Amino acid sequence: MRKFFATITVISLFIFGTVPAFATSSEAESVPYSYVLMEGKTGTLLYSDNGNAEFPAFHSAKLMTLLLLMEAIGEGRLSFDTVVKASANANSQQGAQIWLNTGEEITIDELVKAITIGNANDAAVAIAEAVSGNTDDFTALMNQRAKELGMLSTTYVGPTGTLDGNVTTACDIATLASELSHYDELIPYFTTWMTTVRDGKTELVSTNRMILSYNGITGMKAYYSEDCQNCLIASAERNGLTMICVILGEPDEYQRFTTAREKMNIGFAAYTLYTPKRTDIYVEPVSVSGGVSLTVNADIGETGSFVVRNSELESVEMKIEYFEEVTAPVEIGDQVGRVVFLVDDEERYTIPIIAIENVDKMNLRSATFKLLRSMLAG
Image (cartoon, rainbow, N blue to C red; front, side, top):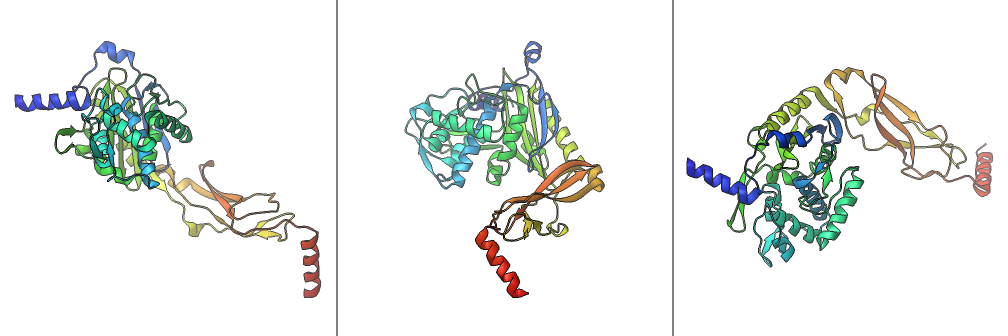
């Protein structure tokens, strides 16, 4: 038994750069505590406690590294089978790593395993260089994507997240995790407890205990550092809902998992994903001024979904609003109204009403032609 414990401790030291740790009271007092619960499919913030407090990004930055990789794969620029050659920069990384040698060839598949299961810094750099050619361009892309997602309190200075200056919040991490949760291809990586890479030379063991027992778990990441203490980003799916729980600054290594289970259970029990039915929405032609036609045919856009408490389901109401001043020319896709969903008279969700045909602006020629056609018809 002693030999087994020593083996796990060594794995923790060399794979993750830490041993299972409990913060001292002085450390715990210097780090804030923060947690957020979000519905991932819609990005709806459900609960937050100090969710905008700033923390070092640390290993959470690797989720952005993963997102940019998945987008590159989606664009066809890379695949999980792509073989990349490790650079001297990747080889020079410290802390958690898989000990890539300079010039060593390795697949994207194994690099993804290395950062989803093992938080490996050298693997994160190898991915960044595969996507953008170098880490500087990749870091700029990380920050650009963060702004696009509305992660306004996040700044990245590198793909590993371990350098000084990487800053984020629980709310921003939840937003990032929400975006990443749409990639089902990552679930097998995130939910693997133990595996090996580099032809068995490096063993990886996950620190996310949630994947061993929580019903519906789909990922994502657990880590520890002195600056942000015990942290957890967890995601799970049940009954059409995706719950994402982010906990930062937890002094106790195990309490973060207990808290996440409690918060996610509450979320699954208390909320429902409401999806409007297209058959319930009838859209009339919309009046147009100054056009060759007095109206334009319209339809709704994507219905999407929104989150409501189970106790609010009976209070959901729908109303259809057409814009009062729709002026020609009108092009296909122009918004000409909206469908509004209210809960207890509070606007909760909208679906755009869009034109499905063009209406040209009335001019002298079209007005004359219209007049002649009317006279002939009469």
